[in-house]
Length: 240
Image 1: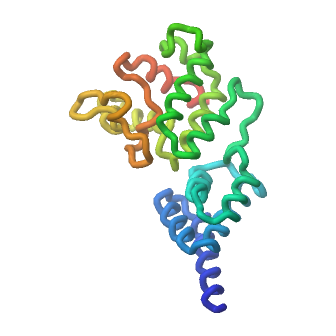
Image 2: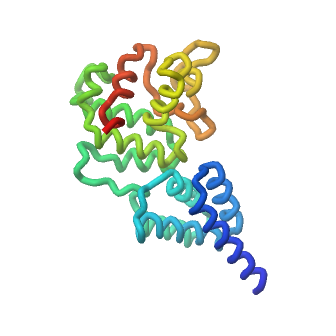
Image 3: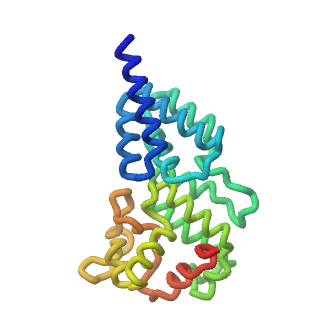
């Protein structure tokens, strides 16, 4: 009995530290520690996620994504049932005001299907600028980028960030680009799109896991030049 009480006290202390800590690295470490307590620890993580997302509804962050993703493959039925009951469509409630339905993209990302999510992201962007399956062209011109609604672009980016523990997303790529004085070659090198200055070959040479470098996904074809990605990085969504 005393051992169980001690475990609960330790978990409570770690939960408090988790909420107060702003370092993602430390948050992930604490989540792993709490998860290792088994069912009691995972219930505490689920309770925290429910409280953050439903009871007090704080702005969603990579902490929520990390909690969801570590609990998602839990072997305990009660945890799986709790996730299904409280988050049947994923962590992010998608408003009907968006131009497209992003539930399919959310489903792929929350299940770590990054390659399929990357393909779907490209299709979504094409649809947002008026291209559909009947068009011969299935890529964007830089002039198309400005047609992408800001809300939709930000939602696509948010989905990538939340379900990658803030590792992937257009805003992450833009952040790295700006940090390297807008130098494209340094960007390719930093996000792992080149090897020994040569572009990687799609799809097998790219890394479709969370072990990839920050900003590695989603992809854009740099072989077509930098105009499209430059237009994306200058989109008003990021400055407004």
